[in-house]
Length: 145
Image (cartoon, rainbow, N blue to C red):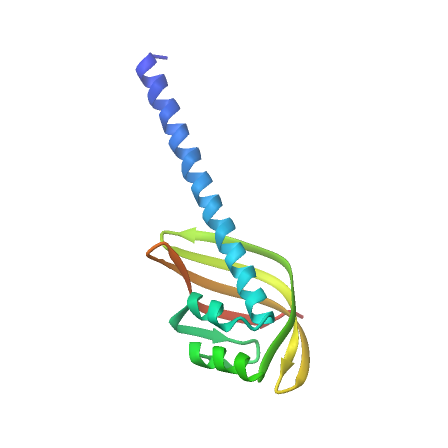
């Protein structure tokens, strides 16, 4: 093979693998952010949670109940909704341009209006990158059978 073609082929592979590495890093970052979000909910760190929730975020719970950003924050602050444990069994992230989609399964334990719950859920979260910051724009959960 001609040396110029070989050099171009080498550069092509270097750029391909560099792109894959950057995508893998973004996926790891998103999965860590998703986990951190659950930790903040358990620890009732609403200031931290508030910074990563888009102002127009929509939470759709497994029972069809929906919440806005203010409702999420206020329900945790008031104790109406409390998470005591989140055990993620599996999760994955996909990056498409400036959007990240997280799919996961886990056990969510807490209380709603002082009534305890323990739910096995499948969830989808969508994050959008704005100025190097990932914001959660929507979340949907479904009960696992």
